[in-house]
Length: 207
Image (cartoon, rainbow, N blue to C red; front, side, top):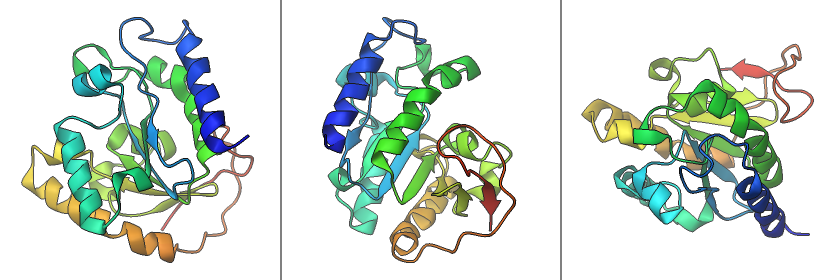
């Protein structure tokens, strides 16, 4: 079975899981893009427009994200885009820890299926999922290994829309992605630690 069909099965499983937070209060926004994409973009949770259209990043923040794709010459459909929490929290509030925890097993399976070369995190919630102690004001644009995955933290496009400095940083950090994809930095040799379940030898190694 190919990745597309496996992802569809996972989506159907999530859609049927009535125990998930926000079930019945918002639509499932599973994610979209190329199942064989080398770069996976992960945000925090859908917003109003995402809930309505059941697609990730289709509002104003999504339009800015599309501009970033144009900046590096990547069609939107050449990457994969999703969120940690896959239903809209009421009033676009931040996702709660219990919501993140509930959706985590599905996100992990989604990542395992996609198996990207780079995970580009959009915003601090997404970054802290992989790098819990990092501060986005310091870590943005600085890749870090999380197990076999190279994490590239980016400011959330919604935040960049509100601050010129963040917008400039987002553009500069985005421009690093094609080179990271072609020439990823070597993985540092660090003691193995146990963390989450994406693979058996995860480690947080910053450089």
